[in-house]
Image (tube, rainbow, N blue to C red; front, side, top):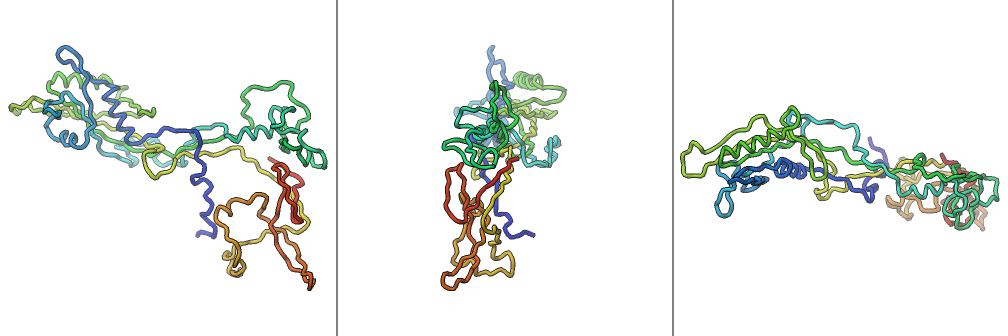
Length: 403
């Protein structure tokens, strides 16, 4: 049963897309191009014709050419001349089940939502390094150091900061009284803020293709078949293929190559030899970019969280009030009438200088001397950010501890 306020805050919903980072995608069209390049470039079929070698053209059958591959008629050009020899490729069934055309998948049911593919320094790390001053620099105004504090209080290492200086109470190299003798130029990644980029889990699929060798002579068919057999890798009937983006897949060839010809027709048509076989490629889809209306699939997360424990003081009682009038049945539903409404962004983000607590104080009627309880928002002050708020309801930070 859902409770009031559930599903309001969406911390990672489209707000953490990595900047200046591109991850290559693989889709169905990329696998089609990889199969086309397998026969057009990787194997590179050539036949001997009139004493010279000629490259065999490859087409990806679709539309009218798809219909021609279903008949015994060979493909002709605009002058009605046969385009032979020729290799035609037709995409067939796509299996997205766990069997994947009996080849299976690496992991059918993932336990994790995605893969972490990149770990790099966050753009916030530079400011963080200025605060901790890992090298213990003493003569730079843009790094935190103990000399930036004005020792006018009992709080170590100080409370107020000199103008145009940076200071921090984090007990790192910044609060050291001594500087390092030698600056360390090694790649020290022991205390940094990292950005971790994640890509969604791949969607596995297996695609079948029907390939047809069109020839006029049996000698041409023999040359093309032997070229395929020679390219087999390993003990099985498979060849490794690679997409344009660099993803490696394996093309599994069928064990039989069926023959179809018109030798027995004894007609005036030009002779035609056709060998047909199948290819199965277990593939996957990662980070698709051609689909309209789908947001960027990459997400980034920031490491090195800092827990801040603060100590505050105030002259009056600090309270937390429940401002939800419909959470309890006995709440007064009219208490927020004529009050300002807050949208979701105002609820999620605090106004600078304000906190979620309130101060309870008494307001005295100057005529009747009657005291009435009032609640006021708390205004804070932070000299590090240049704020100075004058109010009797100010609370004051007296100490901070960071872990």
